[in-house]
Image (cartoon, rainbow, N blue to C red):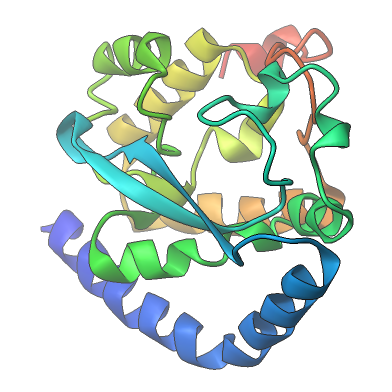
Length: 207
């Protein structure tokens, strides 16, 4: 029952988001076009519910010669590929705003495991252990407020599994409020990092 209520909430909130944020969308359209050559939006094949495929939308933050289907943290010196406006968008997570459309369409939910790249087979395999591939992926989730880019794959999948076990209104609110705090503090954003989190405490890894 909660999953159905959650989906209705996603539709209503994403529609309101598209309407209310339209002036910001317009401002970002202009900024991206003036900053560098290329399209405003970037789309990429991702893994959806039950490991189906869909295209996720973001504001373009990278130059046109960036290698495709490669996570930013796996690029050698990723800063050379990120545009000036792109650095601001990524730091503030504003590049994720077009995913409101993915949510409205039903590809994603507001809260859930972040959708893996179509070729992140190791992450999908780990998530299978926790049934984390069996719900709609999210704009943000439990793993995102507990490390984001810093997390190794096994810890990320385990946190996604914890979300599945505790899924409900209280958990979603906790994830949403935690995301706002993480964005303000820019927690866990590691451009060009390895995806590991050596600075995480044992207590945090055990969550």
